Structures are given as structure tokens and as C-alpha cells.
Image (cartoon, rainbow, N blue to C red; front, side, top):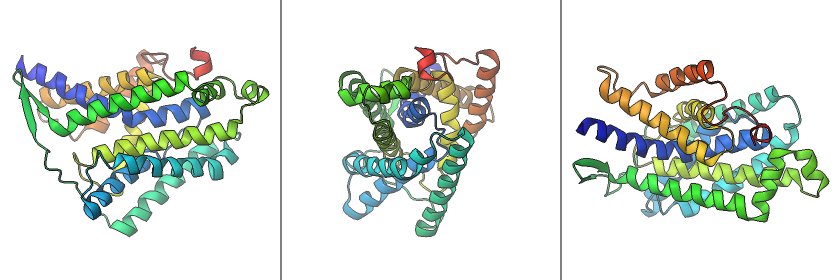
Amino acid sequence: MDRVLQALVSGLLLGGFYGIMVLGFSIIWGVMGVINLAHGEFLMMGAYMAWALFRAFGLDPFASLLIVMPVMFVVGYLLQSVLLNRIIERPHLMALLVTFGISISIANIYKVVYTASPRNVPVAYNGSFDLFGITFPIVKTIVFFVALALMLALHLFLQHTRLGKSIRAAAQNKNAARIVGIEVNRVYAITAGICIALTGAAGAMLSPTQAIFPFMGAPFTLKAFTITALGGLGRIPGALLGGIVLGMTEVFVATFVPGIGTNLGVAVSFVLLVIMLIVRPQGLLSGLRPMEEAE
């Protein structure tokens, strides 16, 4: 019973991280129809930025969010304004190829600059505490609650601000949004900025828990597909639910299936993705439908 409770808690904490990790991927896909294959590389950039700030100034990875998120917002805004807005009306394959090229470029640039040697951020509080007989890793617990706070902040922004309503309007019908005076390309650029900032934040929060290296991003992009299929496009509760389902699945498989360990997370993700597409192709929460059809 203790192992089950421990696995539930570990899966929940991992799911919270997955929820914030996938949110940018899900919203960009849901709002703009762009499948961002460079998603994992933006997460990697956030992790490297947190590592660099920790090494240069001793800045805590969670405090570094105050720098990482604005910088990554600018990266996302410029990427969308300069490049993606030019191809967003073209066939989806064009955006796929462009973001794939961006992912390869970013990973290899980081390899040249930082080499392929793994880096880590050795925070002093990277331990654990026990509560009711269950072990809680301190860093992952902090990540879980920071992720919930960021998702709540984004939800309030989208629901209660003029810009948030413009983003939702552009996602539902961009032509109608243009008719009522919304600058859709500017909205897309801001949306991309917010999404890349959230992805960079996920990378910064990940930095104390695992090794950082230039090609760490691809598995996270692959997991983002599974979580998006589970939770739906551009849905904050769906991203959290999908993340928790994947996190629980990975932890339970690693805990109760002998010989599996924790290194087959990507394989588990794809098995889950295939099962979902066969058994429930619409996902748990109207998965892969565009937002305007799902409402």
C-alpha cells in the first residue's frame, strides 16, 4: 500500500511538471495550428539559461524565472513575428519543416557553444522530506506548486484580460477576429512569446532535477504530443490532466513492472499515444480537435 501511495504522489508531482511543460506546445497548436517541433529545444534553452545564471551569479533556478521568462518571451515574440507569421497561412507541412529545422539548429548551436557534456544545477535543498510516511522530493514539490501557480495565472489572463480574450477570439475564428479589429499577427506573436516563456520556465525548473545537454529536448517534444492528445489543444485543465495521466503511467510502470526502470518514459508515452488514438481518438477532453470545434 505504501508503494502505491508513494507512486501516486510521485506521479502527481511529475504530472504537474508535465502540465506546465506541455502548455506552450498545446496553446501554439490550438491557437495557430502550428505543431512546434522545436518545443523541447526551447525547454533546453531555459534549462541552460538557469544553469548559466546559477554558475555566474549563484542565482537560484526558481528565482531565475524572473529573468528566463522575459528573455524567452522576446525569443518567442521575435520568432513568430519574423518567421512563423510568414508561413502560418501555408500548408501545415511548411510549419513542420521550419520548426524541425529550428530544433536541429538550436541543438547544434548549443552543442558547439557548450559541448555535449552534461551540466547540472546543484541546489542545496535537493533533498526530500517525509509526510505521513510518504517521501516528497523538495525540488519536485516546489516545481509542482510553481507550475500550478503559472497555470492559474495564465488561466486568469486568458479569461479576464482584453488581450487574453483577443487570443481566444483569434483561436476560434481568425477571420472574424480580423473583422472586429484584432491584429491577429500581433496576437499570434504575443501568444508565441507567452508560450515560449512558459516552456523556458519549465526548462529552468527542470535544471536542478536532471542533466542538461544540447539534445535533451526531443523526448519532451515527443511527450508533448501524447499529453496534448490526452488533454486537448490549448486547454489548461487538459494539459494538467494529460500531464498527470502520463506522469502516473510512467511512475507506476517504473515502480511495478520489473526490469523497466525509468529510462523507457518515451516508449511508455508512445504506447499510451497509440492506445489513445485507437481507443479514444478524440482524447480524454476532446483531444485533437481545433478549439472552435471543441467549444
